[in-house]
Length: 594
Image 1 (cartoon, helix red, strand yellow):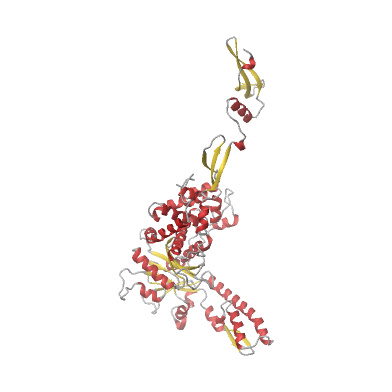
Image 2 (cartoon, one colour; image 1 turned 60 degrees about the horizontal axis):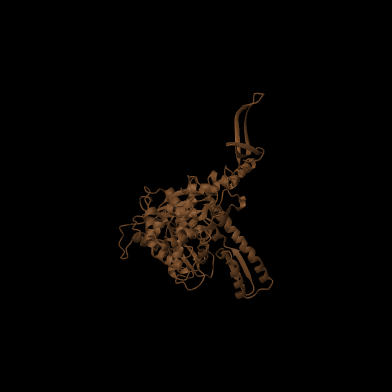
């Protein structure tokens, strides 16, 4: 048989333990291209080429090709038919499942899937409902929850379904976080905010005090109920002209009748828990006392504080010579404890702000005075109109004595009034009927200052994370459903922010304050985060929104291998930050959401 008719193949030869003439131990590895053939009934080999000098991967390719494998360039080995963001929705969905949110919303079904998708979308990519519909198809959320093909009618039907389940959802959240087991202090925080509406047809739309500074816009009010740590529990929507006291009465009725909670301590600001509301808080409609009495913690207004200081009253400056907190009593508040506090830092800040505003007003008045003196502005009416514009700019009109005639104008500070107001700078007085053996004076101050957590939730809901405003819905039920979605998204965000604190600029271990009146301080670790921007491994710290954007770069790809028609879903290799983000919420990175 001719030698050149045999098949060639790659042979690898390894030789270990070889000792050369100098006594050095060496290992050798060689590769040869050989042909096998028969000669007189014997199988023989012929070396066609020595491949030892070639790189190892080239030898592997020659070996694979001779064995019949089809070789293609690396760039053409696979085709990625589609790549969609996955990590951010997967993380938020995993936290939602950890918190039992799907079961909390209601029984399984399409309505629940749509409602859950709306809540997750509000956390990840807040936007209008119509923009959310198109966004679902651009992430794995739409396909995995089966909502990618939803219509606007489906979406609004899901909102109506969710709004009808609001009482049941909030009752379960109240049981979890306000019940005696989870909340032994039986304390709840409540505050009111507003957002403007676009349009004029919503029954809830009304003109009122705008906390967004949107003068002339119709608005709604909504009150947020939280546990002492600021975890959202319930939300209620009111007409835009609803006052704080009315909202407080409504939420107390919800807590009593729908949540079935007794002997709660309600914490609210001075404009919400007024003396009239306190009298009605524990009375039935017929005026008889209620057996399930509620406590409260609130603050006095400036006129009431001034009265306590006047004519040798119980509140005197000497109380704060060596301390900034003192507990006093007054016959005007029978059965109540008054905790008076003075914050020197706050006093200095208010004095500086007042002086700046007064100086700014005088600066605006100066050219107006010059115009009147030069005879360029005459008439009491026109002069008064111009003065009104100036003194209302910084709301300092009460501190100026303005005298206007047909051809003159004078303005002077009311220094006595300014000094009287300055005497109250840095003072605030809290009132509560809670006994001292249940809550000491520093505890009362801490509880009241915890209202900052509700304010933080409002920032997250309205601006930082969830973009509640403005509201575009026309029907009352849709407005309530929209606000409920934002509240539930805030509930998710509250837990995500805590879990991801090691990856963000969030203070993981805020220092305990020995003095609750003093300004809060960040821990040294949090200050180091803000200063260095990177952790010890060289990974950057991110904001909460920045972390979600980084998680979005973890994509799910549909991969098709050359020569096949089947696509296989595969995740991109996660970064160390992405791995840690999922570890912190106690789950592995899932290929799909369901």
